[in-house]
Amino acid sequence: MQFPPPVPTIAVSGASGYLGTRLISALVSEGGYRVRALRHRAAAAHDACVDELQGNLLQPETLPPWLAPGCTVVHLAYMWHASPEENIRATSNLVDACASAGVARLVHVSTAAVIGRAATSWVDEKTPCSPTTPYGRTKLRIEEVIHEGARRHGFDLVVVRPTSVYGPGGAPLMKLCHDLQHARWQKNYLKSCLFGRRAMNLVHIDNVVAALRFLIGQAQSLDGATCIVSEDADRANNFLDVEQVIRNTLGLPAYPVPIMALPPAVLAATLRVMGRNIVDPRCRFSQATIESLGFSPVRSFADGLANFLDWYRKEMSADKRSNAQPGTANG
Image (cartoon, rainbow, N blue to C red):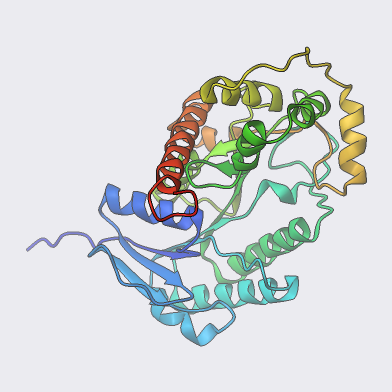
C-alpha cells in the first residue's frame, strides 16, 4: 500500500508582521504546506492548514510546540523595542530550539542594512560588511550567531538580505507620497535637488515573498548561502524617477522651476553627518546569487510601483469617504 508523502511543515516566526502576514497568506494560497505561526499573542486560526501558536523567543520553553522534526523554519522576527543583547539571546534560543527539534532548514531573513558603508557602489554577498548603526550591527551579529549554530548542529541554512521592502500597507514611500501631496512645494523641490537620482533600493513585498517561497522549496542543500533580494538592476529605482511616477499617478503638478540636481558628493556628506548607514547615493545591491539558483521576480519594478500607488489611491479615497460621513469630525 502506498501512502501520500507527509505535508511539509513551515514554522514562521514574526507571523504577525508585514512580511510574515503576506508570506503565510501566500503559502496558504499555494497549498501543500502545514504552517505553524508563532505569535506573541494567541490568535484564532483563519485557515485549516495554519496552526496559531503563542510563544516568545526570549522564553525558550515556549518554542518546542512551534517546531517539528524535519520542518523548515522561516525566521522573520526582530524585537524592535528590545535591546541588542535581548535580540541576540533570542537568536541563540531559536538556534537551540531548532537543534533540539531536528529541523531540516532555517531560512533567516536579515537585511541589506548589514552591509553598511560599502567601499563599492555595486554590492553583492561577498562585499565586506561595515554597518554603522546599532540596528545594522545587531542584525549582522544575529547572522553570525545563526551561521555558528547551523555549523554546530548541522541543519541547512540560507540567509536572505532584502533591501527596502515596500508595497500595499508598507511604510516605505508612504511619507514621500504624503509630503508630495501636503508639504510646501519648496520643501519637496529642495529635497529633489538634494536627492537627485539617489538609489532608493526598493523591493516589492511580492518579490520578497516569492524569493522566500523559492528558497523554502529548494531540494538541494543551500549550505549557509546568503542571498540578496533587490530590484536595483532597474535604473528607474531612484528618487527622481520614483517621485515623477508618484506625481503623474496622483495628478500632482510639476515644480514651477526646473530641478537643479546637486552633485552626489553633497548628498553623501549630508547623509554622513546625519549618521546614516548607507551614504553612497549610487549604492545598489545585486541579486545575482539567488537568480543563479533559478529565481525570477514575479513583479517588474514598474509593475510593483503601480501596484503600491493603486493601493495608496484607494486608501486615500476610502479615508476621504470615511471623513465625509455624518457624525464624524468633518461631518
